[in-house]
Length: 135
Image (cartoon, rainbow, N blue to C red; front, side):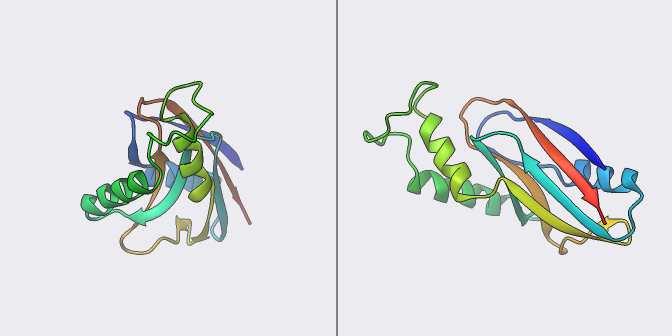
């Protein structure tokens, strides 16, 4: 089973999509298998991260911003603005595809884990993820 989920982001940050992905797993009726999620963009990414304390997401965002800054004079790919190339680098350093086992019709995530779409662009956008559920 393959489904597309869309998420409207409000700019940089981590947006939890666990419930949307779980909904696809539930609809698939697969008891045990694998769920694969792929984001169809080059300036956003996916991650599995802590979903209990928002400060963890804040710290991740700040850390990545410090290491990939928007004011690097070496960047030439700036057609869509100063966050264009940094967003591509951030997506390359993180993940564009995730795989999560399915057990008893549920994503086999840990107690404090959630699936996040990580928006790297300053302005928000509508992002698409393909979710594949199979045995």
